[in-house]
Length: 73
Image (cartoon, rainbow, N blue to C red):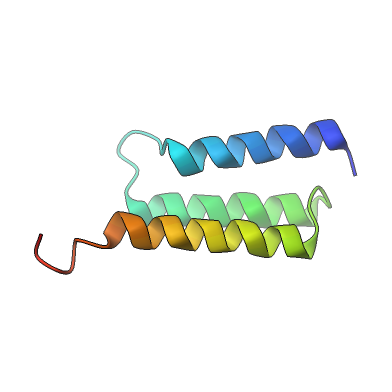
């Protein structure tokens, strides 16, 4: 497992989590975060436990981003 490659991949993932691309809606951001997490796990940059943590964070961000949409606020 390359520590440098892992850190770069996680930094890119965190950047997308905090600053989605212009015109990227919450669903697109969530999908891209999951793809990035899947890719990191497939490349063996992260463990299955780390993968689950990233997926949970992506899900929490998705809920946060869409929270007020269905309530009419």
